[in-house]
Structure formats: structure tokens, C-alpha cells
Image 1 (cartoon, one colour):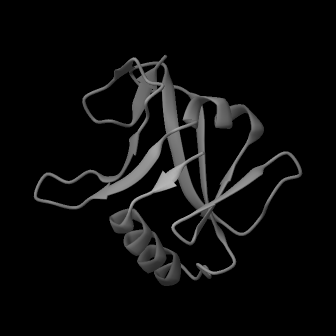
Image 2: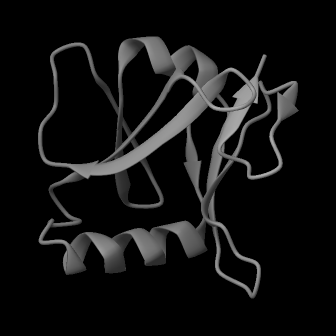
Length: 109
């Protein structure tokens, strides 16, 4: 399960609309790939396609699509948005990560 904070929801709806996506029908695609300074790197983009092996998660009225491999790494994650003076944008608070890099975009288990 992935949880979406109210701030992340509001920003995702705003950005999806600006980029021509329909927040009521389209998805936030999240995933994990090899890379980054800690070994695994988060992926986040907007998408209107769903593969047969994708899992759809709906939280806080936001549709998230996750590929089958990534769901194991992201279980229990909270997707947040930080927009302060030193804000980083979307932030993954992942309880499975044993170590994260300084920028918060990669992690290891």
C-alpha cells in the first residue's frame, strides 16, 4: 500500500492538469530502478497507460500505478510533497529503506 499526503495530492492534481493529464482518469506512476548513489532510485511520472502486470492503488482519491517488481520495495511508503525554501518536490517516506542519500532520490534496503 502507498499512502498519498494531502500536500502531494494537491500538487499532483495541479501538475497533472498543467501537463494535460486528467487526474480523475490518469495515474501517477511510481517505481524503483537500479541507480542513484544508494543503489536504488525512485521513479515518479504521470501516465495514462497501464500494463497488465501493473497494480493500481487508490489513496486520497489519487490513482497510483506501480509495476509488479517495484511494489515490494514501496509497500508502506508515504508519498509527500515538500515545497518550502529548501523543498525537494515529491518525497518518498519509505519504511523499507535502510539508508537514503542526501537528496532523498535513492535508497538501499
